[in-house]
Each structure stands twice: as C-alpha cells, then as structure tokens.
Length: 392
Image 1 (cartoon, one colour):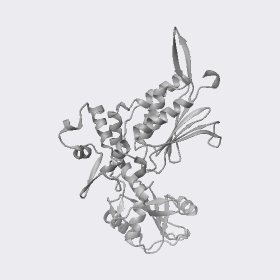
Image 2: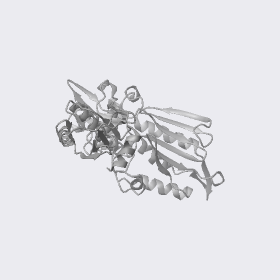
Image 3: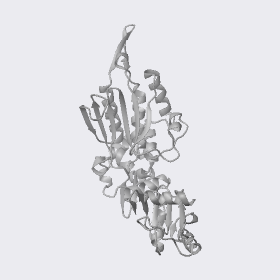
Image 4: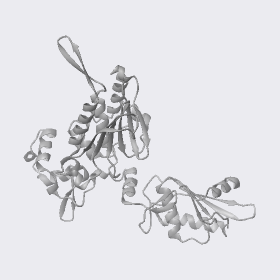
C-alpha cells in the first residue's frame, strides 16, 4: 500500500473492512480483530492509528509484525495466514498494515473459543444464527441435520413416517428389522442427546405433528397483489403452515387459483392451457422449500402481481453457485442434504440438477421471456414474467 492510499483509507475511517489500533494491544484483542475479518469479508488492520484516525505510528515495526505473525498462528483457530507491510509517513512515523483475507476454513475463533464477525460499526461476537451460517458456508454443518432441543419423538407422527416408508421404499416398517427409533436415526431424522432421542429439523419438517411450534419461521406467506408493487392492495393473503410436502401443495394450489387457466376445444374435448407452466411453478416452489436457509427467521414468500410471479427464498446462493450455473443446470450444490433426499424420495425433485434449467425453458416458451434471478437483501428472488393480458 502506498502512502496516498493509506491516507485515503484512514480518511474513510473504520468500517466493515478497516480497523484502527494504537498503542500496545493485547494478544486477545489482536486475535479477535483478525478472526472477525477472516470470518466476514477480509480487510485491513492498521496499527499505529487511533480510533479517531490520528496517526501515532508504532515503535519497532519489525517486532510488531513478528508478534502479529505469532498471534495469527497461535491465538487463532485454525491458524490464519496474514500479509503485513509497513508504510512510513511524511513525518517519519511507521504504520503497520495487516492484510487479512476472507478465510477459506471458516469459521475461525480465538484460542479462548470466541467467534467474531465484522460489522459496519466494528466487530462483535457472532450470534447463534450467524455462526450456523458460517459453518454451513464451510460445508462443515448442515442445519437440517441439527436436533431440535425442545422437541421429542412424541412430536413426530409415526403414522406419517410409516406411510412415507411404504411410499418411498415400498416396504413397511417391520421389513427394515431395526426398529422405529433406529431408522429415524439412520435417516438423519433424529439424533441422540444424552438419554433422549430428539427429532432433527428435517425430521420435524417432514413428519412433525406441528412443525411450526418449534420452527415458526418455516412457513410460506402467499399473496395476490392487485398491481405491480408490494404497496399495492392485497386481495388475498394466505399464511401456509404444516409439513413441507403439505406446504408445497398449498402454495402450488394458491398459484393455480390466481393464475387463469384457459380452456380451448380440441376436437370434442376441452384442453386446459394454464397461463404459466404448472411444472415450472412447482419447481421454483420446491427449490424454495428445499434449498432455503432455515437459520434465517423469515418465511418463503410467494407473490402474484399483475405482471409477474415472485418466489422469494430466505438466504443467498450456496458457496460456489452462480446465477449462470443455475440457469444452465451446470451445478448441483445442496444446502440441506437431508431435506433434499426426502424430497427426492417423495418424487419432488429429479436429483440431476436440471429442474431450474427446464423450468426456465418452459417459461420462455410461453412468455417469450426468461425469469429474472437476483439477490435482494437476504433473499434469493425468482421473478417470473406473466404473459400480457391480451395474450392470456
């Protein structure tokens, strides 16, 4: 970093990617700063600058940099790789610039066991939900496989589970010869906790008697909006709860109700022509429920506007996934593997990752346009154009 770039950085003040430190700094404080950058988006720690942006410089820069290397290696878990440089100011003071990349082994913690993240106003300890997302981003934890501490096997509908076995495996429970509880454990639908067996998130979502009692955000809000903006009047709003397959059917039914189905006579038989391909709509709904980030306390939202249909899913794209890869079916990354496996057993997904590509082609064949895929805030949004009124 040259001197002018350093001055510009100091002038901007502390932010998501910049932190100042002046005077002697305890190793725990340094480790917290490094971990926070690595867990978030990377950034730079400037040693020799006060919180107010006054340049004080550091004495013995070589010793300071050596100490930082030791802190990054010994006080951060896993050890961090940092790149340091010293910049000399016009009045002879030296500032040490510590470049911390976004870590590829997130989440990182201090040797005291604390996880930190950066925010626009500084750093703070990661919340439980943020920590879960960090583990998910590193593919070291899948939230759908976590047990739900307050739930018990009494909250699982055994009849629904046995019906699933007959449907998915063409076998009754007795044929598996390992017992009901053992089968739940083997399928990732329950976990052992001390002396108790408790259902996982996936177990409750598919077989819970009342999933939203324990997972209140795991629902769908569907609305028909008379206009093209969320501020326009809502003529019908549904709060859809229940098990995941039931939520899918209810959300799909809501779309079918509010999207006209024309009837054309072919020979002696009427032929139904939905405004938008029902298979494509169903694909986007399945993806929203199967791939959403369940650590985010927000529902899947489905809106029918006059000019488009939107499916809004909590959470961004999983690691390595791009919009281009989604459009062409060139990647198949699963955020919730147990949920996805259950969807596959129910016949809701194909397992080859081509569903969205096929749905996009179907929408284009009907409307002449492709759905828009975008990230808005903390939601992945699929915006499906509706045909013009005269074409419906």
